Image (cartoon, rainbow, N blue to C red; front, side, top):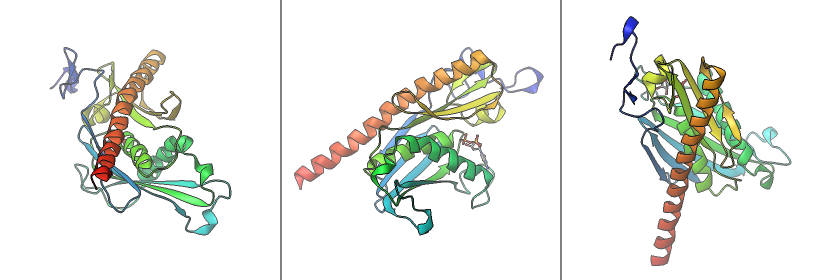
Length: 246
Ligand code: CDP
């Protein structure tokens, strides 16, 4: 769709390029316990994003000098597969993946009861198999579910989602075209009681738009939280009935 001055028209009659309204999330799918060798795992789709999270631990820290005497350390590795994006990505870590690993760890750490496991480590690996904007949010959501699946004691699940701005309007959960060619992108992560553990922003938003975007992303997180909870409950109901049958 071409608008004036050659730019893309993102919203026509209140409908976005992929058919969503401004306050709609992309379809979400969550599967818990997909990897048998991990202590906890989760596969998640948020629109065309496909990510897998694997959690190992609490376990011994290597190298040992990283140990903390009063708590477990948390490590988070975000990795994008070379085939996950349109233009093949060079394998291995880069500045972007270091940044996303750091902010994602910081988004999850506040709810993990690390003091229960001194001198140990909780490792979280997130692999992006297919990317379509919002991979950090999908990764955090999947990691949060994988931590619960691993039985890591937590104060609550962390949920993450972005809001953006396209055609001068604030929209929920931007997909790739909206993220790449839109006017702003604002991912957040929150606790179930509403504390923000991650907030980042690219682009330009007025004060009012900023408030609107945070509010919209919060509402989106509320909906995703219910899906995360349901996926975990379904998994444990399944396991319970399998155990009863055995
Ligand atoms: O994925 P997220 O929105 O958290 O991070 P971003 O750095 O804002 O990237 C937005 C999107 O750009 C990614 O989800 C990918 O679809 C795309 N991208 C890409 O095509 N190639 C890269 N090397 C990095 C990102």
